[in-house]
Image 1 (tube, rainbow, N blue to C red):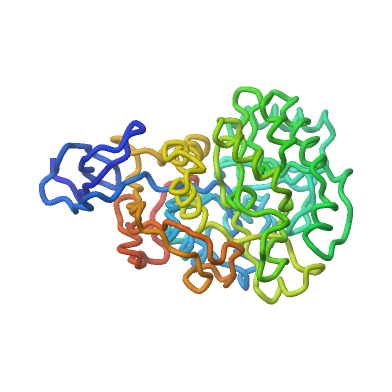
Image 2: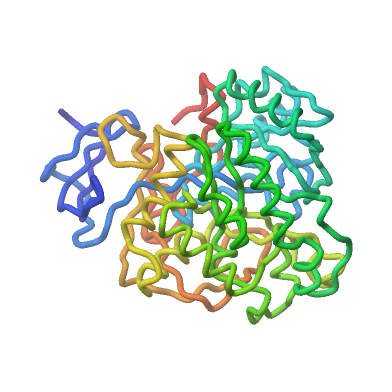
Length: 426
């Protein structure tokens, strides 16, 4: 067989690193062999599947001063992400098929990696046509950026989940109970007090009790992690890098850089999240990439909640592998394999027939994270000065988007995997 391209190195297959070559044809992995003639040889560097990030906010349309689909997917590419799932709280809020078409029109001309557009629900309206062209439904149990809240009593919650089982689509929940929450905060400790641990734990308890398939976003508390031990089959959860690595006591250049929903919490919560992640109670890591401008973050009380992270999540966690906080095998599971299995099974593993989405990393190449080196419009990061291991190269469907740390892709190459047929040229 002739291949369009072949690469070789230390390839991660079936949970072990082996010297191998990957043959790529028609954008898919076509063969995995001991060697392939004329392959691009990465030597001792590691070849992993690229990452699916199941939770990003690219702010487009409506808030493009913060981010847009070009800068957001560019930042994703440099972070080893070949597919990102964008949340619906843009402007207009994405819950109608007409809005989905408008957002797709924008994204399809800007994206440099693949993507999906998650839809929401407003006034208990589910748009069947929109749902069928979306990877998932997002439900906001508590207010966040955009002001959308889905108030559902237990009966309405069960009814919604029963309907969504018929669609075969995951339901993603921002799990905080508003009844426990307060208003206003002038610093991180007050922000935490306004959104206490019990708010998340009780929301997760309500969701777990349904026994229905669902996904819980950004778990942030030790109590929430404890409740997850009782999850039913088909129920999954995620944690973010910022909840794993930052607390209300972290040393921020500007404390508003740590303002996020759910809030940063205490060290004991952070430690519990690490344990739950290592032990399989939490299934995956998302970035919850939620950029805001530096100007918006100047005053804590008025600053919107959100942290940029799509570019830094994989590098930060790989550095934690280096530091011994998590095994390499488990890091690959939670960063790469599990998000793909849950949301985008054509990606996330090096197997014949899967999309040829690959990253090349050098575990010895540890750098300091600097906002000036990142590609989000935000222009800041709460991880300033922390260690990261960034991918050297990224292939999306066999096309090299990042090469030796430089962008080689083009606007409009990324495709919406849930809105086929796809007619843009490769």
